[in-house]
Length: 339
Image (cartoon, rainbow, N blue to C red; front, side, top):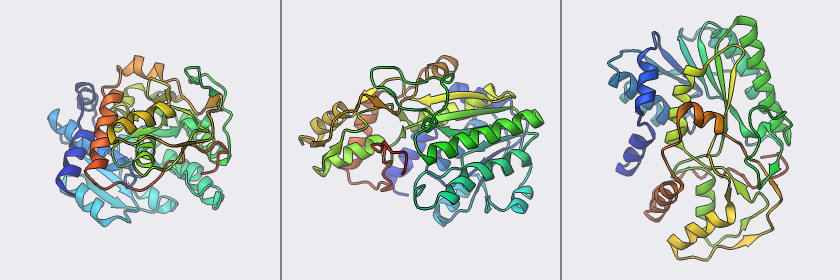
């Protein structure tokens, strides 16, 4: 990792006082399933740092296929134990070490149309294996705002009491994940929190990076999904760890999303002002969008620290410096539910 990436990782893994307080009372180890993805390194390191600042020696264990050998090496250098595991292998899952606290991060979104079987296995079968293996643990599990129907763009979006009615097969499989976790939570009394994450961002990935990149490259931005919520990854990581305080059976469900509904057109204009480029657009804003009302989350854990100005500046500076991105478009503009 270059210096800029190390500085970014330090930001993404910075625990606040409440995170440190939450982890200070944990009696066992913390295990992250699916830690080889976009979120894993920053979240695992935040947990490691929080334990250290609390004077604790609890282990942080990262589990993934680890196709990226450098990521595994970086995690281990930061004091995080790693285990390579095929999480579709029931025997391998049963052989994973005990942990009092588990973060379930596994999911697949892209390729739903071309390989629906893999989508359903990843989003429903793996959670079933994990919930049974760790039935005696506290579990925080990621879900998605895609479980909701489109909501009026001039509203706050759906809250946690809104009936689930997803658009497309990916969203349906995520509802399946939630149903599986809910079933095993009730069966075993496993305390859980399910976080419906919607559009976390950092300088290498996210809706804001997609918009900024198109502005920089003078590519037209599709306005079909004309309104979004955006959240900084550091705030998302902090809520994920604090969510252990909310674990119950049946599961606590919380939307995890930015507190504002923002217009894609105006976000593009903000980046255009920074880059000195007039954004180009195609299509028109629909009256509905994929949104989430995360008021309950922010009332429970306090408001997010990173404001939109910080996100715009951080991402703009990163892209103008030519630092690497993950080149993984979110396809947020898709309205058919296939990614």
